[in-house]
Image (cartoon, rainbow, N blue to C red):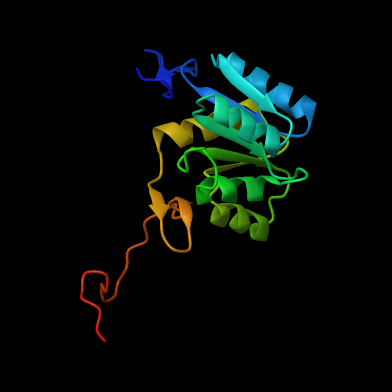
Length: 175
């Protein structure tokens, strides 16, 4: 097994021992809770950052496979952090999965997070099973990574909807 992968034993139990995670949250208690939950599932390499500046510092020094980031922080919030990672403005790989923690689950906020390039959303209060579900989803059912003029991040489509119309992508553009 390679580093950054999830291991399942013969009974299907999950082991996160090969996953290096960085938790970015300005709340010390939340960082500890998330860290403890990850440790229950075997995680050994867990870094913590109290803000995005500390997170970029840690990401510059250590290889990380997953970022779990809070939505509402200062001076830079989780959305701006995600946008900066996805823009390639830092030494962090653009493709790194980002799970966003938030109590703001209104549709407009969820769409904003999706459009910023968040990989998965985790609503507060956090449960161990919900956190594990998001981590598993991130690594066992990864979405394609998209790069375009207007968006960089995981494919935003969660479902395949049959298209019943003219397929214009395969045809040359007319002038």
